[in-house]
Length: 264
Image (cartoon, rainbow, N blue to C red; front, top):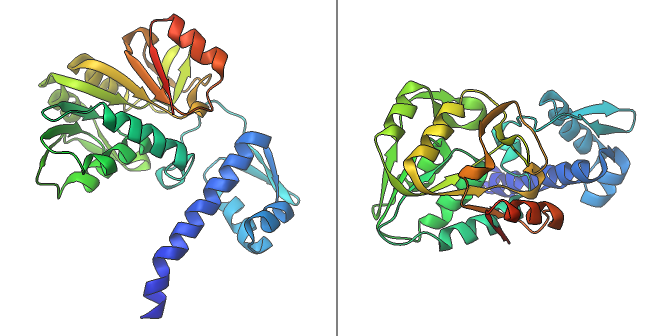
């Protein structure tokens, strides 16, 4: 019985550690095994195993005594790693987003880890209809009798826990909703909104067409990034909710485009 009781705390500690390592890489572009071992109070072997996982995911290149961040635009991280990255910021963004949702609203939650955090808080609301292609969102809300959940159907894209394909797109095209909470792989002032894969492009475009109010939810690291596949101009957005790590000049440039930028 004891090992089972210990499983959940171990997973929580492991997720927090990976988040700390990812944040250090984002800030410094390089990390040291010995320094991480001291800072996180774990063995050097544990840090090496973490860095090996990140290398296998294409995020770092291991070096003698540490690792360096792979320099590329808006890399598509595996879902389990993306979920712990900037987790506290995502929770704050989600809390602000949920304040905008009123009883009787119909909303679309795009696939993503930030929208997953929104779903967790939505369980406290009543009289909401949620349309989504996100498997993690469905898992959070499927037992909430006071929330109607409409799942798009489609082909499972396992790398980021979402449903894609013509069935998903056609389902979304059947609806008109009050609010869309949209995810993105990158935000650029010239290129606009981009995604790390092409499979979700038609889904995101259908969501934008279906929604009266379009609200982007994204952590600050997405801004100034260009991912693989463009899917919309910035002009489609009514609001952006992000964390206070966003560069003030970038926020000002977005506001100059007529977008309401909310920092939290």
